Length: 96
Figure (cartoon, rainbow, N blue to C red):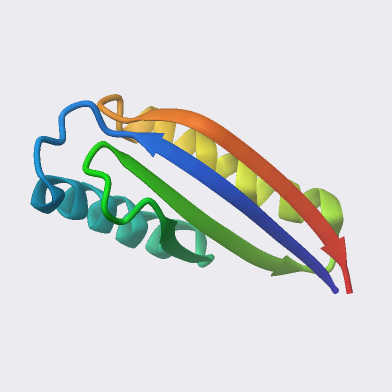
């Protein structure tokens, strides 16, 4: 079993309040979960209105496939949300 995890830090320049941020993050999380069938949640920076850190994980039987899924998530955010900047993206693939 192969587990792929990544941490994605987002910069939300259009967000002016925590309410704005939560609407943007919830939209991104829901769309990614539906599109890629991965586990995703906001894992840090909950009180900062222009930063969000997302944790994403997937399970596969092939490390290359797990890495591709996580890279597709990154590309999806960049392509569908030009108003959001990815300031950090870290991936780890673990064999269980």
